[in-house]
Length: 138
Image (cartoon, rainbow, N blue to C red; front, side, top):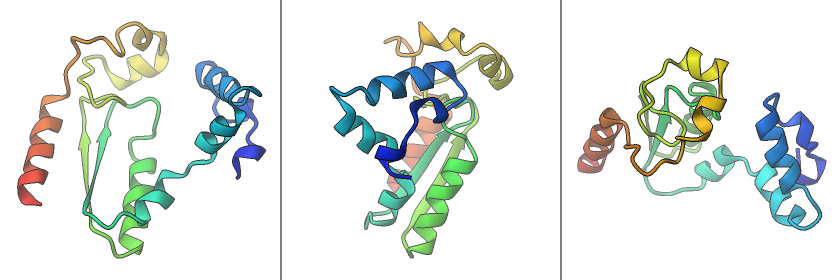
C-alpha cells in the first residue's frame, strides 16, 4: 500500500488513531502524512548495517507486542543482519512502566491520554537493564 492509497478510516478500528490519520491526510500536510502512513519499519530495518536491538513493551496498545517486533526481527535475519529482541512485560509503547494490566488498558484507552507523556513517568526498570546489558555486549 502506498501513502496515496491510505484511507484514514481504514487504518485502525480505534477512533483516536483514525482521527490522527485523517489529520495527517489533510491537504496542508498530506505530502508528509502520506509518507508517514506508508512507511514500513521492517523494510527500513533490513538496510541498517549496525546491530539492532528491538525493544517492545508488553503493554503496548499501539503496536502489537508480538507481530510487529517479530516482523522486524525476521526481516533483519533474512537480510543476514544482526538483531536482538527484548520484550519488557511492564512497558507501554513509550517503554515506560505501566502498572495497569494490558486488559484494563485495552478496555479503556482513555486512561492513557492524560498521564501518557507525563514527565514523572520512568522507563520500565527491566528495560533499562536489558538495554544496558545489550550495550555492554555490543
